[in-house]
Image (tube, rainbow, N blue to C red):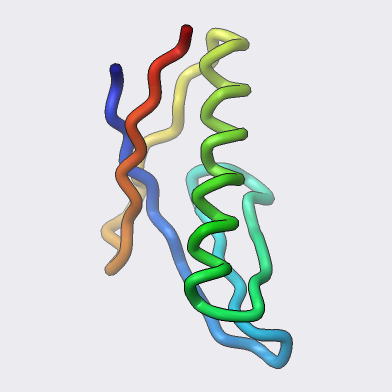
Length: 77
């Protein structure tokens, strides 16, 4: 099982909270609450990670120090 770390930026807006992961272009989600936005970004990152791994592509690394990051453990079986 591999461990990956990704940056996550969460911003409050008129609709609730938006979270995005700079390592994956276009990886952005909206949630009514902070917790919902975090859960949705985790799910979206997992999908993107799985797509990259199954395609044999490089997985992007954290490219800047952000105050928040997610660590995801994933096993490609």
